[in-house]
Image (cartoon, rainbow, N blue to C red; front, side, top):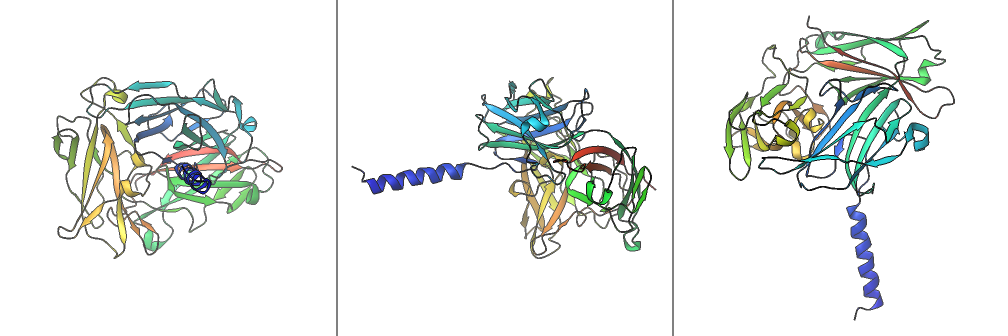
Length: 422
């Protein structure tokens, strides 16, 4: 017979385990469960475009993911309004949503003819159940069994009310030493609406290739004229241009595509890519890339979302650590440019090479290697890739406005431009 003290201890242990199993959502692009793969979110008008839609328009977001545990799960979702720096706006759902505040994902299909079994889930936003009614940053939350303490995915997206126009120029860096390696963004916000104090009420954020890690905040225009605000300070919005992304093609798992050295099939499928070299010392080469994007494709089937198989893709980087204490990561939009254990490579000191495996679905992929210096905490995008002003990148500018007395920030303008080779 268990004594009362023992019962109390057992109850306390059970509570501690339950609490440990619970997680909290974060306001960034994140996958919380290892079996969830191939998360996609884009404007339906163009595959792999940034998840930006116009307020009260016919534009829709396509959101999808695969669950490698297969079967059918009880996945729910909701959306939350956020500030320009991705924190909760602390609004009631009544303030930013029409109709319901959460709903279940009911559109799912099972994989067909694949070695790796999975279930493909898909969702479009806005829909009849969930419809944002104000502009701004939003986080889409997917969770199990209607319980937000069991997070599955968090995904950022944007709803813009186009009240201003944003003119963007991509020029060489104003700093002489960086002229051949960096790209500088100058932009002007053209408006007809009254903006009483642009220094406190208006913010602008610039990003490169839709990568949140590159975001630069602008709070003070350099020139204020009637109907226009110019942001062209000499040393601001100066981006490392990088190099064109590396890429590989695994649309077929029978025949070798671009950059594929070998395909090995057993109980699972493995794809070995040709080893990559350090291109930081090389000259710029005009390669065609997709600025970090990926596209799910399958040459052997008719339905890409459900007939595309998964493969363990092996990356090899022929390079040595640039500093004594750090790690190499392979990144792209396929993993939200996140530096974690799944994207980290291991160094083989005897061969002086980095190796890593990532489970990926059939398709076309862009990727690059970055170095995280553990001593400084800084990420170096160019140490293995090089950086050249000629590199073709895309730049995004978001303009946020908080009216006097208003409790939230509106997204009043958005521009997406490509850099121009000189």
